[in-house]
Image (cartoon, rainbow, N blue to C red; front, side):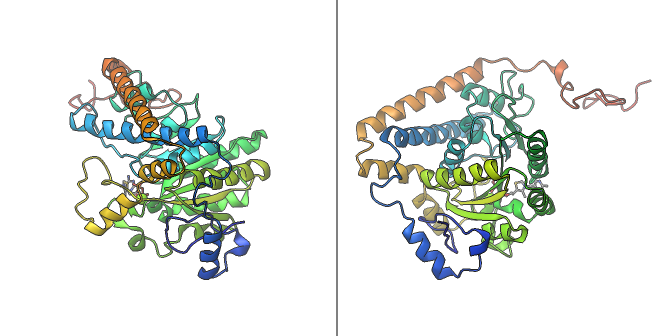
Length: 379
Ligand SMILES: Cc1ncc(C[n+]2csc(CCOP(=O)(O)OP(=O)(O)O)c2C)c(N)n1
Ligand SMILES: [Mg+2]
């Protein structure tokens, strides 16, 4: 059932299982064509589900656009990375997970926090650095965390989440549970040592984890071809005799299907897997990046792969969405985003006295509570 293409493409579906990985590019092409959903074939999903996927993606889009605006108004501080262009992957993976499954992400995680079911007001409040936020306002954009929905962060250090995620998978296995860990990261992250060490351990120990590589084809300003000797990232799985798949990350239904397959296999058989989701970053690396290093071609290619425009048009063509129902969804989404911003704006700032409360889980002797300007040594 699994197929792939050698290069990112609109209709990419599934990559290969390890046994298939020697197959040549022609076989991949043929397989990809056979797996086209095409026309009005939505793999059996009903119209309400298809509209819900649209609504959820649009919500993340408008939330992120509003976030960029709030950042420019200096309501949000620190670094701020958006999921613009990756909404289909975020929503598709979110739908494929059980609520009790754990999610680790990099710093580009606002959409994942929403997809995991965290109240949008709390996500925006964290961005605003308010005490009602997911991390009580001390984490900000890159450090959202919520035990209730099992979002275990939000990591600013590239790849910081990867070894921690296999630790969580080991804990699940050790306790005999049937939850799964999804560990999201960017394609640039697949070149760090901890990525390879983690895949190796996960495969050796049969840990229930899916490594989700968001191939937005850029790490800050560096293209995947310039940073990865093997830019077909799903192939990295074969080094660890792990199942590797590639999916069109701009197709929400395809992502839901392939991610669901890998997550359920991990749950059932305790087998790790790697999923490469190919998408296009619609804007710069972070809100402050004007992305001047991009060619006009790259900008227009990204716009052509806007997952929301594609899904909107597909649903319109299939009669699942009308101009009126799309407008109603738009109005509802904008109202919910407005309410989230309002909640954040009305929420209090954290009490400075709590600044050092979350440095360590347990008291640590000599833990410095020094603030800038305080003397190094107290008399
Ligand atoms: C250990 C470490 N090195 C460098 C950085 C600076 N940095 C932040 S994001 C980034 C690029 C990561 O690209 P990718 O993994 O593709 O993720 P994307 O931003 O595209 O989601 C780098 C080098 C960092 N945060 N941490
Ligand atoms: Mg990237």
